[in-house]
Image (cartoon, rainbow, N blue to C red; front, top):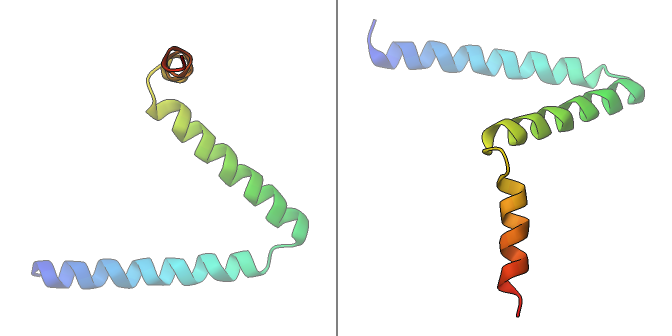
Length: 69
């Protein structure tokens, strides 16, 4: 099995999962969709919190204060 075959099999699996995910999302009620959106936003916030070093936001805010005359 060559690299091309591995790539082809992987992309087929990704396409299948994307279709399944779209079908699942199409069956969501409005309340379930709102909950899923809130979960997505919370995951984004969590990733942002863990990807920046502690105190980075405070340092940015303090740096902005010092730049103003």
